[in-house]
Image (cartoon, rainbow, N blue to C red; front, side, top):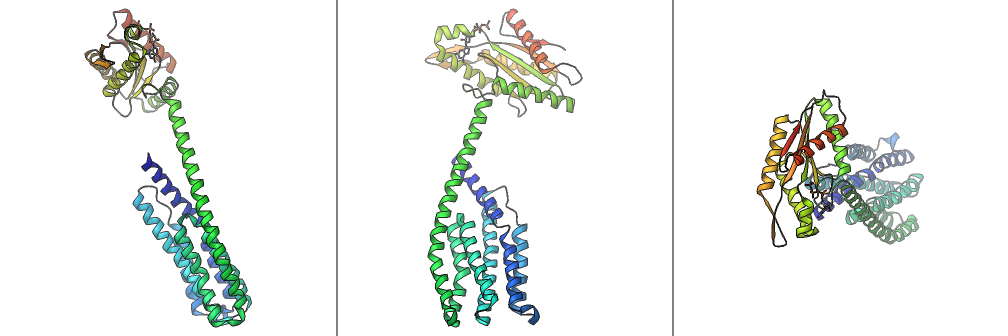
Length: 369
Ligand SMILES: Nc1nc2c(ncn2[C@@H]2O[C@H](COP(=O)(O)OP(=O)(O)OP(=O)(O)O)[C@@H](O)[C@H]2O)c(=O)[nH]1
């Protein structure tokens, strides 16, 4: 269960990293283009500008194309590492390009535009990628610090901008930490809700005592089996089985012992009807139904007889008693070409089962269509 939750969390982290990373690369490319235009790098065919554009376009394509894997934890971990490497590449490229622009031009329209872009990028990284807090903070600072250092060392006229940037850093660190906390609170709630929904879904289709399907789900499954049979032209057999003299068991040993007997019957049924396509349901108090797909009439009959013999040869040990059980069983086989409805098949199996009761119980009766 814990493992499943960890897997779901890691899949969510992967998917979120990808979806939050989709738009960012385009802005790096756009901002570099505009800064380059404002700085007049087009006319001078500036090499740092061309190199930055080249790297940013390539990493943008790589970020968009590397979709999150859906299988193993190792492949998800590898995806996260690779994706972060690409984010790192974008940030370093922009950071070097803009620091160099600041170094070359000082105060200019390219500086103002680039500075706002730098603040935007560092904020977006710190918040959008806050699930991976350390990496997010590292890249966010990597975006800001080189520009800050260049301003301090080489552009004394821009020291006010450096002061604003320096003041922004602690604010960024604190809010990123909050985003990280909120992300995991939200993820935890989401996973808990999904798990609760799954549990409710499971409860709505199973019988609480035996863990088999309940009557409602049995009806759904029978409808589906009919549809499959009509499509594939394979036979569907329906087996109904009713525990004999169950009232006596309850009366002689207690209702709890009766419950244990029902669990015991479910176990024997699971042993006999163990194919993946076999559907076993508890359709009444001491009544069970089995849908056997793609089976010949004979083999469904054989399985039913096998179950009847195994059950009568077994004992249910409960509360210091060894209780013997038998069942009366009715079998009917549906061929796709026969024009009957699922509920009519059920009635036919039911009447076969009552024939077995009337003929002395602990036996299998078969109805031919
Ligand atoms: N312990 C237990 N008993 C149940 C449960 N559901 C139904 N029963 C009991 O199953 C018994 C069924 O009794 P009957 O319908 O008379 O059938 P029977 O005694 O098996 O007799 P035949 O069907 O003729 O063999 C009743 O006493 C119900 O109370 C359950 O979940 N647990």
